Image (cartoon, rainbow, N blue to C red):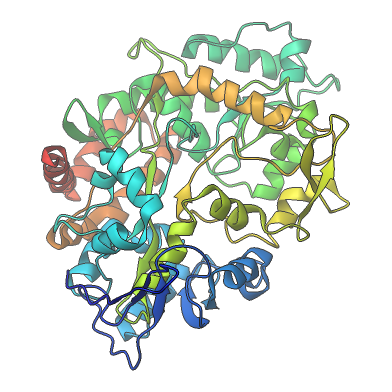
Length: 540
């Protein structure tokens, strides 16, 4: 990468660099250079404006307290382009097609897939970031140097890095692939259950007891043993492993790539789920109900095993009253004799990219690097003092942060009104044990709930995890090949899953189902992923 940085030495040894040329692929003309401080804050002594495109929520980003505080600290003010999250990918695609791009793309998620990064990077529309990381991101560079697997997972086939990641280090985080399942602790107590199911037979028996023994005590058989407000997504994620699968789709097993939903294991899963459904143990509305209907059931004590990020978010109870709701523990089956759970790859890409329209890639990278510090992540997540929290002294003489709102059940909702890191995956480091904002001044930190949740995850899930498929980058040809039939295959699989489970289609048609998948190009689909995996596996 051509470097056009001019070092200016001052009497106080402050180093300032002029970002005139920027990065390889950055072809936008620049009428003037922008002086960028290499250390300290502000990043620029003369304030500058840039544009940022990100998925929007209910709050206007220019009104977010965290955004205002970052602008004041760094000297970089962003004009925010924030279409609704449901429209974001389409709007971003339109921006790429028209060339009317922002300086920075933020929190894009799947809207900026690895394939798109490679494609737009090869065209010079997204600029390569690896040299800028070396020169302007000491915090991220240190992490990547210490964790080569992270760097491997964010590097495109051409050797360039086109987006910054969210990272989940093992010493600070225990990320789940999806929200967990939770047992209704009051039902377990009512039925005298002291040991959770260890296999699918024991799970079936417990669900049957949920249905037949009136654990909610209202004298009616209105219990729903197993339910999910995400059209089976959470249930599927945690029950597929019981039959030896880590994913509904592409997964790697001992170096070989397969499509799980075409395997014999998947037929066993469908057989089990059909049994649950036909006996009334799986919510009959699981494929169709709204989130509101689901919440109505979980909040009125009608569900025994349910999906949610935290059990209290589904039940409506206070966190401290939810410690008796145990997390689901992976179960085994006749074809899977050891517990298995899908593992998070500990890297999420596409969280921050710079386009060739950027006025100062150097300044943008320094801004992003701040998010890889404890202070930067804290500001992004919780905002500055006074916006959502304030310092108070507890009875032990400790200075703690306390929620300033009145309705403690709306703490997370109120956080969404001040934080950029809300409902998005943003660049930075995940830290499950970061200092909390407390509901009450004398609450423990980490909260009792946080301690409970992390203990459940670390004891039940983490020892049994395997990553379904690593973070790999497709070449453009590979991405084009995948795009031919990916949506059709996934749609067909999900439609048939519902039909097989509900009995609309008999599993006697299994061979016909597999043949249809093959006729849709499944073999070429899997081969493409195998090639990408093999290339990734050989990368140092």
